[in-house]
Amino acid sequence: MKKFIALLITGIAVSIIGCGENSNPVDNTNTGDIYEKIATVENGNIKFEVWAVDDDTLMTGYNKIGFKVFENGNPKTGGFVKFFAKMFHFNSTSFHATPVEPLYNYNSSLGMFTGYLIMLMPSDSTSRWYAYYNYNDELSIDSVRFDVGWDQKTKFKIFTDLTAQLSYLITMTAPEEPIKGMNDFYCLLHESPDFNYFTQVNTASMNLTVKLDSLNHTSGGNVNPVYIGDGLYKGKVNFDNSGRWSVYDSIYYNNRCITSNGTPYIYFFVP
Image (cartoon, rainbow, N blue to C red; front, side, top):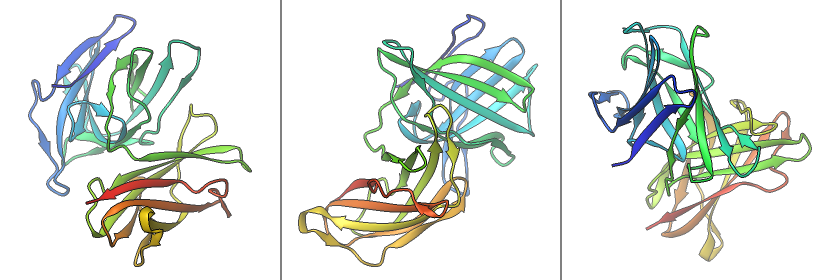
């Protein structure tokens, strides 16, 4: 069983919690998502619990997560949570961050502060992730190590707008297991000047091209993604044959095409 391990490097707080340990799953009846507690981080009278959907650890790519916050054993039921993560590479002085929900707001039906987290890389022997937890700009715990596993279904692309000298990350969350025919297509878009800070982009226009590589065939009936909230754009892709497909996304933002230096694409295999 995989485990999410949190260790405060100052030695103030230590927590190692396995899948479902000392917790009952929380079911979101609207989406079918089931949240399980994967970590507890404590410092004095402050405690943050981390909950995740589908896995018992954080994985590369898109993660649905939630936080529960306690002060003196009393749960917080309003305000917001901020979460920030950095990966440090031990063979250099470099580090980078990763896209997170701008603010994790309280979801009263789930009893936690919910949102997403996109992990760019897994942990390894030369690189480690450290996290900063903040509640309502009042309570915080800093420099907590955590591990990230590799998900082979991870689908994201990094590209650069050379004109603006900005990098972008497009993350595709669905379809995870594509089928022949029409599939719902979901993605997120983030902008970064330096990979230390990411901004969620909610006003881009996207145009999909869906190609079957082996026949150089482009499918019809695709629906270009539009922003629907919670960081997500939704469209539809038509895989009208079995095989290896490439989904290209031409993106327009700030009155220009930001993918003119190379249109990002993601591979899908349709059985």
